[in-house]
Length: 265
Image (spheres, rainbow, N blue to C red):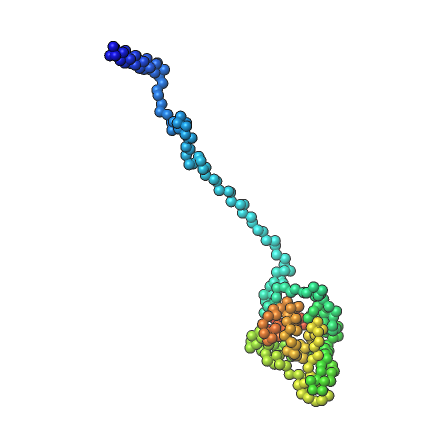
């Protein structure tokens, strides 16, 4: 009985297989293997994507446009000023800063001085206006008498200029000892020698031209010489012989703009 039942079941399975075969042949379809994602969905697992899809490559930002910095055409007057500074052996300071309440201009302390601090008129201007004698106040260190002495402008300026021309190669941009410790005039009252010193009070009222002609700029303190260099745009750092030399040469250039060409070449 059991053998007959098993035989009937096998025959039914074979018949079902034959029907399935015929059906597949008639439709022309073939079973395709399931993709990995489909099989994962059937199993309840999330599909795994390639790394390139999970993390797409980020494009780098485009480079910034190249900006051309165009320089404006140079001003011819500015070029001439620059060339003039290059030819001058005096080093100019780039800037000066005045304290609050201070002005770059002052009342002219002397007829031969300008309204700018530490500045004098040119030799041409002085001669044209009849200013041929330059005077200054002196005081005797022995008898304390105070009086005025005078210098001939052209004569004394030529003495200073000639001294610089004859000694420029040995000075090396530094004042010599005769400028640092100048020989002073004699007193006409007590007849003492080398005893008259110039009267120097406030820096703004220093008689720069008088001291230049008498070659007595060395009587000024270092702070007064630095004051001069500050307001004439010269470097004011260094020892006294350095700033004293700059003071002499700058004053000569103020008197004669062609001084460097005439006496320093």
